[in-house]
Image (tube, rainbow, N blue to C red):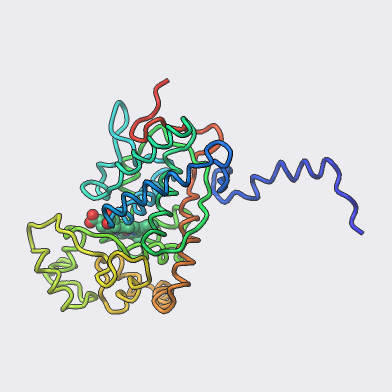
Length: 332
Ligand code: HEM
C-alpha cells in the first residue's frame, strides 16, 4: 500500500499547482471560475450584451472574434488593442491591420459599463474580449468552450507590434506560419483559426492584388477560380472602391461552419492568405481537406485553438491593472 502523503508533500504539490495548470509562457494561470465569487453574473452579462449586438448586426459576431485575435497577437491578450491614443500611448487602432477595419469597440464599452455597475473594478477588458469572442462564435453556430479567465489589462499599447505581428493578407504561407509560431501557435492552430473566415467581411483593398496583379506582372492570381475572380472584379475595380465589402465565405456568410474549407478546395478562398493554406504546404493542405470533410472536427479544433490563443502571455497576479474604462489606462 502506498504511504500516506505528508503535510509537506501536500504543501509542495499545492505550491507547484499553478505551474501545472499554466500553459502560458509567463507562469501566471487562467481558470474559468475566476469570477465565480467576485462577479458571478459576469458571463451572463457579457453574453446578453453580445447577443443584442449580434441581433442588431450579424457581422458583429465576426468583428468581436477578430478583435480578440488582434488583441492577443500584440503583447498578449491584455486589451492593448482597446486603448485610444492619449499621453504617451499611440493606439493600435491606427495600425495597418486595424485602421478602417477592426470593429466592435463600442460593444466592449457597453459590456464594460454594465459590469462596472454590477461589480466595480473587477472584470478586465481582456477577459471581456475573450468571452465576447466565444459568445460570438456560439451565436453564429459554432461550438462553445470554457474560457479560462483572470487576464489583466495592459498599461500600454504597441503600434509597431500591431503592424508587425498580425499577418497581412498578402504575406506568404511561411511568413504567416512564422508569425503564428512566434505566439506559440502551430500549423494546426493556424489552419483551424483561419476557419474564422467562415464569417464576416473583407474590404476590396485586402484582396484587390489577386484580381489584377498578383506578382507584379499584370496577371491575376491563378490559384483563384477565374469566374469567381470575374465576379469579384465587378465590385472591386482596379482603382477605387477600396472599402467595398465582400463576404469572406460566399456560401454561408453568417454561419460558423466548415464551408470556408470547402471554398478553399474549390479555389474560392477570398484572401491570398486563405488560399495559400491549400496551395503552399502539404501539411496544411491535409488539414484543410480534413476540416472540409468533417465539420465537427473543425469546430472541435477551433475551440481548442481559441483557448490556446487566449492564453498568449496574459498579465496575471499584480501585473497590469483592471481598467475602469477599456479605452484608457487608470489614473493614479
Ligand atoms: C492567418 C492569418 C490571417 C490573416 C492574414 C487575416 C487577414 C484578415 C483580413 C485581411 C480581413 C479583412 C479585413 C478588412 O478588409 O477589413 C480579415 C477579417 C477577419 N478575420 Fe482574419 N486573418 C487571419 C487570421 C484570423 C484569425 C486567427 C482570426 C480569429 C481567430 C480571424 C478572424 C477574422 C474575422 C472574423 C474577420 C471578419 C471581421 C469582420 O467582418 O469584421 N482572422 N482577416
